[in-house]
Length: 130
Image (cartoon, rainbow, N blue to C red; front, side):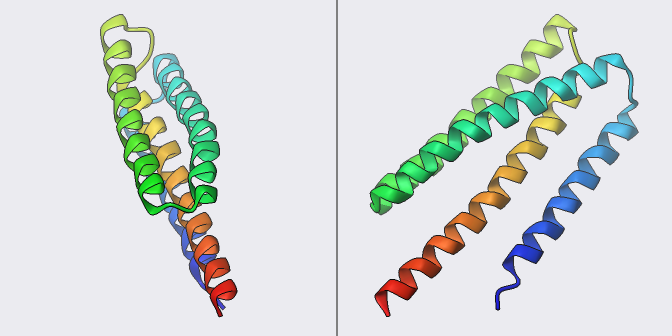
């Protein structure tokens, strides 16, 4: 029996608690909610896009292809985080810190799900190899 799903669930609870606590400490107002909403939306859209490309990379079966998807996804997340932060900071439409916290919460959630998928894929390959 694997404890990995329970550890990932505990990690998600911690991520949610830290993110919501950070937003609460910075103060919840309309600007913060707009920034956090924009960050969460960007994070979820990027999560959906990355999910399909990662599954495509896993099905290809090449290690080089999978590493390319991981590194490319990291760079794309970094660009979206930086662009969104500066866009909100200079336009004043929403709180840039709220954007960053919510976006990073979505990214960490996706990484936790990616760990589960990779672990299941390794278990499948171990069963077929045996």
